[in-house]
Every structure is written in structure tokens, then in C-alpha cells.
Image 1 (cartoon, rainbow over the protein chains, first blue to last red):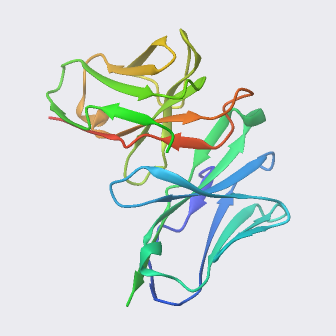
Image 2 (image 1 turned 180 degrees about the vertical axis):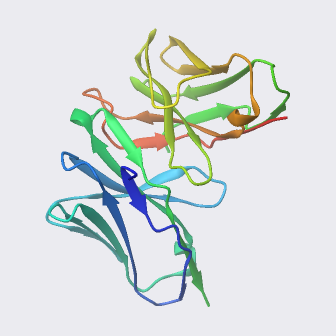
Length: 110
Length: 115
């Protein structure tokens, strides 16, 4: 089993739709979680951290479920510009090990 | 923008030749990293550095070496390139002094093709 798993997609959604991605992790001792966004042929960029209580940044909401060991990203009112690959990142080992998921591809269409 | 540049941005080389990739940062951050990204795999850590002349191996370090003689530069060398090292290589920094497990900022990447 991979340490961090994501559905690769693609998720094809119309503009204005709400879409959600999950990311599961295997190490129950994982301590920090992030979502990164990666545009085609570009570098990954931090989208948002994921806090235990859940957090929101505009149209984006991130949540953590420690009991079931997954994090989620919800995007409301999808825009064409949201089309990208979304990577989840899990930190373990006292903060010394970052593990990246393989990413979920989102395509927002007219 | 974390002030990270990578050179070259694209390179084609032949099997068995040595290749050096350069990562340069302008903000004097302590921690620097080299990753590779391949289809079907997440970003995988090759080596990282926690200061000048202080480096350590990552998950996929075989066939790679690194050097950091100045804070701003972190070099990745493929001693004898193989086709399995065809990949996109990203350099990253973390804006922290307490440890590597913080938000990371990535350079634009180097696309390497080994024929």
C-alpha cells in the first residue's frame, strides 16, 4: 500500500460546479498535511495547509479526518483557472519526511 | 516567489555521461532539496541539504550525488546518466530554521532526457 494515495482522475466538471478530492495516508503518526497545486509543466505551489479543525480559503475548503486517515479538498464554484493537478503532502517522522501523492487532475470545462 | 532558479531548464544527454544540475536561491535559506517527478510516482526526494557542506540522502539517492559549497547553490550530479534517470527534476527550499518539515517552495524544474 502506498503511503499516500490519490485518485488520479481526471475529474471533468463544468464551470461553477463543486468538486471534492480525497487523499488517504497510511501512517497514523502523520502530523502535518498540505495541498499543493501543479499546473501542466510547472512547479508545484502550495495551495493550503490542512488543519485538524478544517480550514477555508475563499472557494477552497480543506479537512482532515484522522480517524479514517484521509484529507479532503473541496472546491466550490469551479473556475476554468482551477484546472490543474492537486497534490496532497503528508509529513511524518518528526517533521523530517514529506511524502507526496501522485496527484488528482481536475479539468474545468465551459 | 521564493527566488529559486534552476539551470539548465532542459537537457538532452547520452547514457554514461555525467550531468550536473544547478539550483540557486537568493534568500539564504538553510534547507534545500532535490526531487524527481515521474508519471505514476509522487515527487520523490533524492537528496537534501541542511547547510553548507551538510547533506543527506533521500528516498531515491542511488546514482546521484550533491554538493553545497555555498548557501545559495545546491548542485545535483548524475555521475553516469542512465535512461532511468530521465525525469523532471525540481529543486525546493523551505523557509524554516527549525527543520525540513515545513512548507516547501519549488524551482521551475529541469527536464532531463537521457538517450
